[in-house]
Amino acid sequence: MSRVKNFLSIYDFSRNEICDILLRSAALKTERGKENFCLKGKKIGLIFEKSSTRTRVSFEVGIVELGGHPIFMSSRDLQLGRGEPVKDTARVLNRYLDGVVIRTFEQERIETFARYFEKPVINGLTDLYHPAQILADIFTVYEIKNKGKGADMPDNSVIETINGLKVVYFGDANNMANSWVSLQAVLGFELVLAMPEGFNINAAVREESEKNGGKFFISNDKIAAAKNADVITTDVFISMGQDEEKEKINKLKPFIIDDNTVKSAKEDVLFLHCLPVHRNEEVTDGVFERFSQVVFEEAGNRLHVQKAIMEKVFK
Image 1: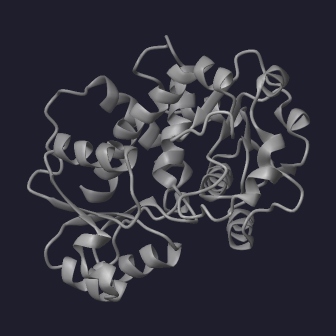
Image 2 (image 1 turned 30 degrees about the vertical axis):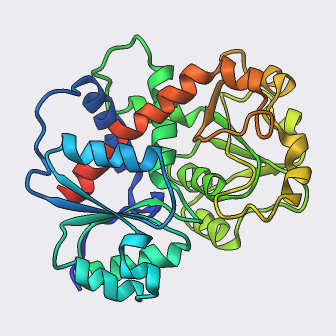
């Protein structure tokens, strides 16, 4: 099978490639509206086995703005929904499409699809990782920290900005926590995961992080964890498809991001959330609204970052 450039996890990009993507994202944001037909004539499939607002719309709009043709397919639209093996669907779609974005369940599903599709595949979310989101998150931090310095930032500005950061993630050891772990391994900032006793990162995620030189810390004390943080971030306490695990919320409740959490962080701390938000569950309504402009800018940045990713992967 041919070797192609996939983006199934952060580890598919080197540190330099991530820096290039962040710099290109800034340029694409500034240049939005200018003609850019790098995907002209290309048919890009969007296979979504999970519902979505931001991921679907930002990828569809991004494909159109790059001159391509998005073709959206839910599991209800495909024989996947009736049990067709992933590898068979991949081998069929390989004959029609030039690339695919997949939002699915197990990481193994997207990896199997990529093995048989033979063309570029981008991860739009799995139960293990959400790499497009995490690049939008760190781009938002980079952008705000460099506000007023002009659009033409030097190549080393990304590492200079990110290397000294302390990022603290609050909540469940889910795909967003895993994504921060993977990003830390590649970029090297300080990462603390604030979560209750008994919660831990997936063993495979930890092993992959260590293999790539990553180092993160787990704290069961949210106030101590937040001390001097540059970025505090969280996700819904109950991930999509896990509604039956309501008991988990009771264990996570003490880790809500509230005023005391923010006060422990740096004065210019940024709060991030990948959305949708459950107010007064993982973050108080007051804290969320105080940082809402940043959070919705973060959501908007999905478009620019994913365009930069697609330029690199699908071009």
